[in-house]
Image (tube, rainbow, N blue to C red; front, side, top):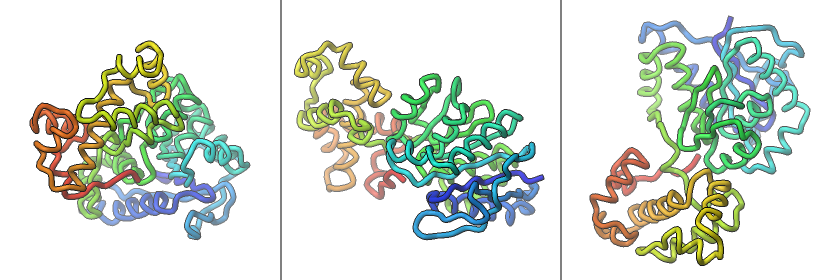
Length: 327
């Protein structure tokens, strides 16, 4: 009996699939040193044998059985290689995706654990596995997931969420975070940490530092207008009351629209714009942290450092050296 089943669909993001296999291969080689069992796995695909991934790559894979047998393996779905809600809807309508959805539903109904990252989380949603659970996905897809499954608590700030046998992760390269989490849960901390050290993977806990306010709008013209207005007002950003007044709506109505588009309130949007602009100044200029704080309207460098640590888990100086950006 294998520990993991990787379910790869045609066109899946090649890097997401590759990091899954590379981490498992590293874990198998490092297991004796960590005094842990060697993980085992298989790769299946609805259109097998073999599956064509993104970027022209092809992977050996077994055909997904029409009626998969019950097994205790964790089924893992790497990112689908789609970037926006419309493309996800189109992808999920295809026959192979529908077969994958049904296989995931059956596996979960038998008590089998499932996991997915990025756009592949929408396969779990289509299988009815997210209702009543907490989950995450890429932060720019989070509003669509909330729309499709209102009964799911979509926590787009988290890189990995586990709830009741369903594990989800953020952007496509958060597949590495997902795999370390699964190794840690199933094989222990020692093996997961050994893999992380050898492959130089820094397990991240949050997506918040990577979320750009303009992209969180998910097509909302209102949020785009608000973002531009807040940026233009720096270092003295408008209050929520001012923003509502300028848009001829009540603060409560404004809050409702912003939360529907981003999953957060107007104050969080204002804060996000300020911190994102601060990050941009830190990585693109030679301004001191105190000067950056002044440019975005904070009292002093201490306030900016405190807020960046809260949002990103690191001091502003980290972003001067390098900013990883969304995967």
